[in-house]
Length: 460
Image (cartoon, rainbow, N blue to C red):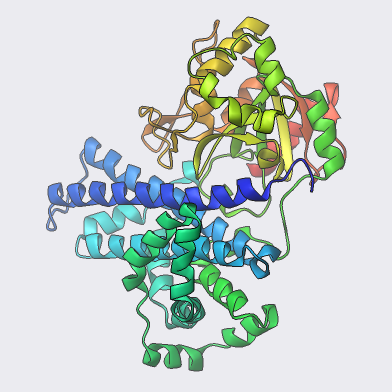
């Protein structure tokens, strides 16, 4: 197996991601309830600034978490391990994700359907985050379609036919207990009757499509979950058969050029998660170097870093490089396989002295274990989006001060913003780019800036 991939890390990421998104969406439900208590059903005027902010927080957080779930379900359905020993684990992750998707969509409908002013706000276009007009109505229409009843049937049938065996897995593997709790708590949302199933079967040929994908009932179940989530919005961002990931020789070349403190800005082509993120480069990670490098920087014995040593030096290996990265499962120390599971990469190098790099990495690692910020609210420190890790690591180190950008009523910092700063000669230098949609080779030195600009111009 390549050093740039890890089955156990990926499985853990799926399970923890589902758990964190479920917790986050429960918080959004509370926000929505408080919001509707304040906004009268008969109110027809303009939103006050605080009400506007509350609705936009709900909107951004919901669509970001929804798309993270959609991308996960899509990747699971295409995962060949679905038909091996880990198939049940992958199904449980996908099934619980689908349940969360349906529950949150139906909750929104139940909460705002009789409040026209809120519906109009949720249907507004917000180009800063790539949110099109009428997206709320499209999801609700998709959710209620009879066609989805048939997609859903295979997943429900697999769960009900295997419920006792699947529940027993929670006793064998405690990491599955929370997703099993989610399934049992939300299963009522997927109550499809035989009559609904028969009506849907007569109206669609999707059963034929499912059979061409796999003769396995589990394969059909996962296909149904993929469609269930409302891929109507995501289809334009997906390409059949595409698996993001850089070739191993490219990964090795990039790794040789990296230094601790580098910022890795990456992009997956045809990814659902590109949908509501501004710019061509939607995701970033902080390169830590290997454990030996952490020792050389003089920060290994800091009180908050010593407990992290098992993650930095897994099984005593101090030579494997690590990143600090915030994804759907939170801010975690990960292998390079995580950001390298992308199609394109830009490496930004901070213009700082080595002791300042050490300070930034030490500050960044203080955030390890925090949750992911789906709402991109930089005013809250308990959850961090990927760029917030960079912000909280470097802002205030030396003369570093990030210029924040106002988007949808809040101050933010995107991956594109970081790259724009580097192109303008501020704080970072762009030292490497690999963008195979434009150039099949790694570009360094004088080739970097023109290729990065070419990518940025394509997005515009």
